[in-house]
Image (tube, rainbow over all chains, first blue to last red):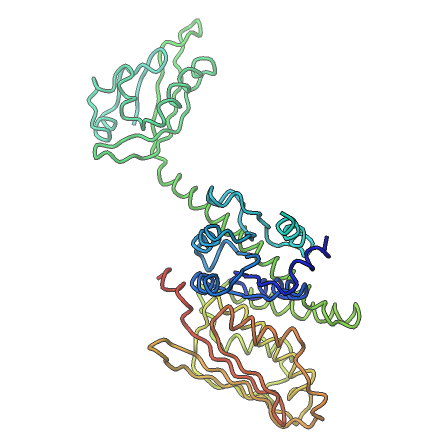
Length: 125
Length: 314
């Protein structure tokens, strides 16, 4: 399974939206080990900017809570652009708006293998 | 507010408080007229509670009741039956008590609990991330244990500061002193010079900044200016404005080091990534780390007002 993800991520551009420095650092490192080129944003503005600049974004991994506001505007843009998106959240999933329920969701704290499994599912679609 | 009823919720009397609050007259509220003052969404609850009441010998329902001005408040409504000698219910006497503030508090508490859960999970994610990254490039289990314990202790210290930050704002000086004091067992004062104003650090920045200071301090202690008596560590900072936004410039300067430069290829990957990548990413800071001729130099330019988020929250 790891191999599929590694193969898929190699050289791909991945968008990470995470406002916590430590959590972001861990995730970015993990993806870079898989050979991905990671673009890390911590704010809504920076993320929207990255989405419009980077072509193509292979996968986006987005924290639902950004400094007290939600990342809904980013998710809406990603869904509109049909970019495969994984949602990360420290909240109960029931907090999410109905329109985001279809997105694969990884609860924090997530393990490397959990994230890999979700990515695997996403890339083998 | 007190009322009397017969049968299945047919009111026979309501107290003057009911009239004053709802604007209904005694006639208005009689029979099932009182239901008109109950929120439409709660009427079914009121009816079904009455249907049960006879069998269980108690009426109990939380209902929103409209005041004269049309606004609704939550009332806890309870009724007790009066029985004749044959234990047959002949009448009900009940009260409706304003529990609106209580409901409000309960709703707020629910939000707080969810927020607490979010923060707890996030903190565990931080610990997890620190562990995974510490495990990289560790030579042995003992090495991993020591480094991880060190970082966990630093995280725990800054959590301590954060827990009281509402009453006691976190100043940069406190944050640095706490870290150096913890690492040096109070023995470093003669080798460290701190100078700068009482700059307050935002809570959202404090954690990452404290971990960055921890990495620099650990490094200085193990390999840098604080690793021998001849070294000096000077930390100074000042505030300035760019585009009418307040910034902080912090300079970390180690001098007097007499160690061959080839031994200076530190801090570790973790500290370097934390300071050069993670700190800028989260806080919008600009950082520069440089190994000078006689020790580590690090400059951190930090916006004191963060992106848009502080504006949103006032």
